[in-house]
Amino acid sequence: MNGQTNCPSMGSSWQPAAITDAADQKWYKPIISVNADNSGNRHVYKAFRFSRGLLGNYFRFLASHEFRMLRKVEHLDFTPDQVSRPSDPSPTIHYRLIEGRPVKEIAAGKGVPHNFFSRLFSDVKTLHQHGVAHMDLGNSGNILVSGRGDPAIIDFGSAIPLSWLPSSVQSWACRKDILGVLKLWHRFDSESMPLFLQHYYQSNYRKNIYTPTRFLKALRRWVTSGAGAEDLSGVATVISVFFGLLVLVSFT
Image (tube, rainbow, N blue to C red; front, side, top):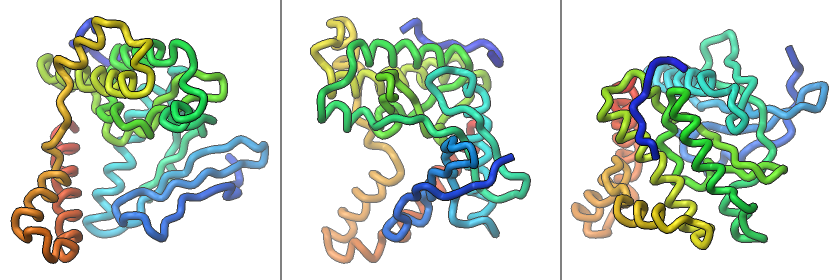
């Protein structure tokens, strides 16, 4: 563990096997592909679109940041492991695929496994003890149900190292993660949620309306009154990415 944290007590040849449909994907989103090596082991290959100029530097920073966060926690049972980056300066990252499905899909079918969210709650506390806050656990796509029914946490692009932060900010980051777990627990399996956690969630959870994207959408609606909004979408995207860069740089 790198430093104390102040959280509340609460060589292969690649053969493409699957790839995300990049045709309709936003330009700032990474392209995710799943590849199999000669032994049949499957790995995630995450690549950003730009590698040169200012955008290339920004995306290399994102890839490098996620790589560092994953390396801090890859030894845990519920995070991706075998993390690597290519020797060239391209904005890419590789790690072993966790075989599983998003919790939202599982909940819509037969329901989540018994004690799933209590185990996830415990795993997030373990994550904090190893010096990392994920910062996007309220996104159901970042929580997988493995083939054995265990929780798994993916996508550490927004994660931050707790040991670099003042104690008050550490507490805020840990609380944000906990509330993200409680949000999903309340949404998908509220009957198994202890009463004291329900009270904590209802008393403390607030929908985040202060993200750059949401702010710019509201501003665009106010300026245009719904007319010509598409003309400003590209500008909004660029400004949102810029704000995202400022936030990430502030933690490094």
